[in-house]
Image (cartoon, rainbow, N blue to C red; front, side, top):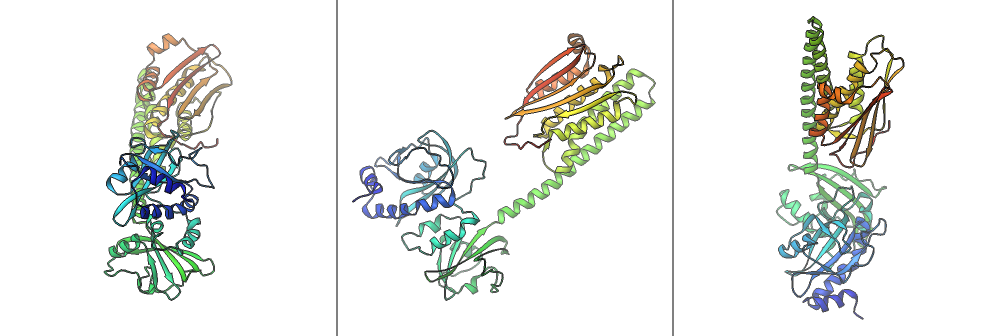
Length: 479
């Protein structure tokens, strides 16, 4: 009795019986792939018009939710919705990490591998993961460490017709028989050893002669049945994993992953981090030097108005310096906004709180990551508002002065406010004559592309501003 793959292929495609049989054999292992990779897997074939593909087989992962509520077997995959599938059919090449729209109009990321029969491409194997997932997508079909033992046992049952599975894995695969000779190697293993300078095919050779970790196998933990070691050879960094099998005349499997690009990126990130730290450290030192010069100049001037201007300028420079101080410690272009505001609060109180003043300043809310541009803008705004409250809100002799800085975030929308229980002010009059508030309004509008709201009365003042954060998927830090 014909199965679904045979029925669909005979009705919608020009595939021969032998080609259909090849697809059927691959379909048997589709569920194993889905469970190992925690992804949806499909087999698509071109229809007779050779412009549209049809889904002839599917497998949904059992351990994680599928991106599909219903079966899509028998449905068409339009080229405009699944460009990765169309590309692979057109070029006969794998396609990595391309966005697609499912038949249920969900966004997914597809990785596509061609399926061949002799010299003809007859179908494609598709791995799909939800585009909204935060996990990094793999370049090709790759397995987790927890799945290696299970996968290796599957590989021991490979034959000529099912060797496609090993060639879909983005690692070199070698099977060593009980006599110590290589009984199987996939295409990636063959190509890897060619890159390493081996002129002859490793198939059939003694594994001791080709072992990248040397002939000493003592590193392999026989009791654990699984061991891994990082090897540097011929300019490459390789992760070599050895799995004990003792199955179907196979003693053990070796899987080799080229991690050279990962180690190179790690080195680049370290160098970049050091350079970024040094850059921010120098900027911070330069700004603090300028602030110190302004402070000295302020002490020498006899003009109260000039001293006031110099103090305000120094406060703004220190606000910018506070961001660079934190960035110089982290070595990245992101900083927690609460840490910035804590620095602003401490600096402002240190330089501008009068010794006899009865004023406390607090910060409420959880911090979140922002980039250096937003951090600098927020630092200038809060510094200006905090300085204004300290200087003017309580100059009528009020006791128990309180200033509150509040932080909120919902999704990308961020809300920060500075409020006090001071004497208040006339909004229209102050806004026209205050350089500080003019700077605040300008930064919120032009730099943060946000909105600002001012509310003031004789019982206190609250100035709040909203903006959108550029950084997605940030993790809130507990207060």
